[in-house]
Length: 261
Image (cartoon, rainbow, N blue to C red; front, side, top):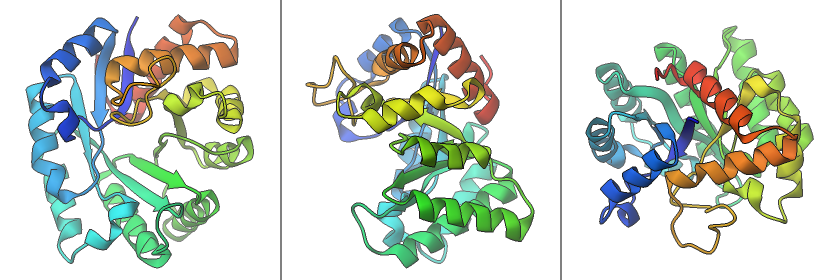
C-alpha cells in the first residue's frame, strides 16, 4: 500500500533533531511521496535542501496569508526564479486567505492574486490555505477565471469547510485535501465534506507538525507516518477500504503535482 502526504512542514525546528528517524517511520508506514509546503521566502533554502536530501520529497514555494505583510517588491521574482530553477518544485503555495487570525484582508487578497498570476505563468498548481474565508476565496478564483479565461489548478489544503463550501471548490475544478482534523470527534462538517468529495478529487495530508490525528492527537508533534490515520478515517466515512482510499489518493496526488512513483 502506497500513501502520499500532500502537505508537510519538515523544515520546522521540531523535526531537526530526528528527521532521519522521522523519515524511517514514514517509509515504514508506506508513505512514498511527500509535498513540502512553504510559508514564506526565508524558508526557501532550507526546504530546498530537505527536498534534495530525500528523493521522495517535492516542494512548493509561496507566501502564506498570515505572512502577507512580508510581501516585498521582489517577492514575486524570488518565487518565479526558484520555481524555474528547480524541477523538484511542483506547486506554488501555500497561499490564500485567513480571516480567522488576521484582518489585513486587502493585503492578503493582493498577495493571493499575485501568486495566482505566478502559478499561471509557470503552469503549476496552487496550494490554497482557506480559514474563515471560503466566500472570499471563491470570489477571487471565479473573478480570476473570468478575467483571464484560464483554469486555475490546485488543492484546498487542510480543508475545514462545510459540504456546501466543498462543492463550490469542486465545481471550480479543485482537489480537496483532508488532514488530521477529519479524525476529531467535533469535526462533523469536515467529516460530512469528506463523504461527498468525488473520488478523483480526494487528497490526504498531515500538515505536520500540526494537527496530529486520532489516535495520536495527544502528541505534541504530528509527522508524515500518521497520514495513514487520515486515510483510515476517510475510508470509514466513505464506506470504502483503506487500500482503495490509498490507491485513489495516491493516483490523484500524482496527477495534480506531476509526481512519478
